[in-house]
Image 1 (tube, rainbow, N blue to C red):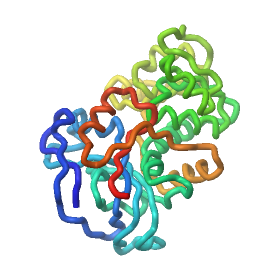
Image 2: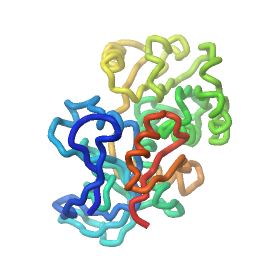
Image 3: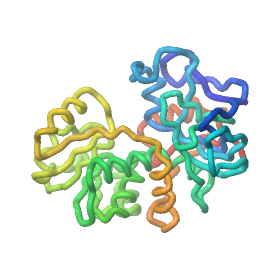
Length: 311
């Protein structure tokens, strides 16, 4: 099979498509023939060596966490799954590997592919959808009628966070570039503000700093007395802020996304009722993974960047 690997940390040029043996199913795992795989900032950060204590220092490493495809082999302990099932999911561990023709995945980290979605759309959804859902529902404790501020609402997590926050009943304000305000409004945002012209003000129950450039200390004055701040960036300052806020009325959190079948099914349910649609900016062939990765690094993608692996 063809699969994307790299032999050292570095820029996109370290990525190579190589021919490797097809994996076999083990207990609790299935082997999937990948139809599409999505790229995320996590792939860029891992490949650049930003998290070696998590990703490790052994090579070669593989790329990709989001995937959609069909089951070709079922291991023991995978009740209910059959060869031919159309599935989607997110690889939990830092081993990655979704950017290839076949991948072995845990049976509890996948769910049936949402009907009505293309393979590319289904692959675009897991990591960003799960991140937004778990940030807002679990860390934010979002309830109907609350006010949410999303900082960075045009990227993969942002465009899906708008829709999920609205589905949970929130009043949504976004901070994004002027060029992307129309997109945010089209996805259901109540207010879309140009971050370059925003004068910090208003009061929000939740501030979700998706872009990662507005730390907890700078946003406390726009939070309610018991407001919650959530970041997607696990840098030291955010981790320290989260730890110190345990004794504070205002709380800070860093969301660490978890791949859970039940939450994937929640996303599918939102898709089925028309409350959530995956946003795909561009689709590249697997062989063009270097250019796809370079486009992710521009931080200008409106939604997700997806690799088409098989027809």
